Image (cartoon, rainbow, N blue to C red; front, side, top):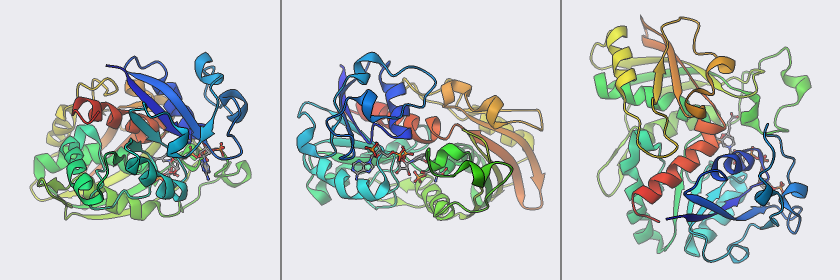
Length: 345
Ligand SMILES: NC(=O)C1=CN([C@@H]2O[C@H](COP(=O)(O)OP(=O)(O)OC[C@H]3O[C@@H](n4cnc5c(N)ncnc54)[C@H](OP(=O)(O)O)[C@@H]3O)[C@@H](O)[C@H]2O)C=CC1
Ligand SMILES: N[C@@H](CC(=O)OP(=O)(O)O)C(=O)O
């Protein structure tokens, strides 16, 4: 079955990554591209400042950009990918769901809502069934599904592996985040070259809350958030793509670094088209992973881990993922694939 898709915010940095991933995917067919009023009526080529190092796919380039409203999108679109500014997503995503569309969204609005599945398929695919609760409560034929924030996606698969092995009690994390996370015009070159910025608005709170929801238990009616303590400190550095993070994880049971590495390596991937063969790649070299060297592992969908060691603050490790692939567009596509596999489309 080919799933017909629309992309909201298709001209943006993440929208372009969605096109890069969806256009060659034989299971998906792009039918509608939306953006702001200033882009409506233009061809995609005219409307977007394309910044990916491959040409715009021909069929996409000539597609006319339409308004970001349900009436502008053909009824036969089965699945909507949304990558809008969160204030816009907050207003329009519910309108699409009410009109019967299933929306896989990358934007931060509604991620913490009780009846909204926040999903990393390899970690908590079962949370997708929160859709039933959402439909009962909101009376929608459609549905709203979210992927988490890019920094959260980077640390949660390794944390899930350690939680399964020894139970997590306390997590501390410091991030080194790439500039692409802020969007093309998010950080100016004068601010970031020869520099590091120890503040990313709202990022710490997102890491602290989203990780607990993702690692929580779904009992068929609600998600019971994990009760681990999570403390984050977020920093912007002058890399283009790839968020690197230093994590300290205190576990309930003793776990040696070698047992932790075994648990990380053995943590299973899924059989979805965009899942990497190896979800978590563990490096022996103490100076890996590194953004430039390792962000494209598994076509940008693998999470790499290195430097696993015992400290007075628990196990310490470093992890890395491609923030606009595994951390954004790839995460939304993976959720779309899970929706297909779970029969929601
Ligand atoms: N999971 C994650 O961690 C990540 C999430 N994000 C999130 O993804 C979203 C998009 O980010 P990014 O691609 O960098 O943003 P961009 O600013 O590059 O793109 C925004 C897109 O939304 C469209 N848009 C803007 N305003 C409106 C409006 N009023 N009505 C309709 N469409 C509008 C723009 O259209 P136009 O071109 O016409 O202006 C464009 O297509 C954000 O919410 C961001 O926070 C981003 C990176 C990683
Ligand atoms: N804040 C992230 C990217 C982002 O937009 O996150 P979110 O999807 O939570 O808004 C970064 O700067 O790297």
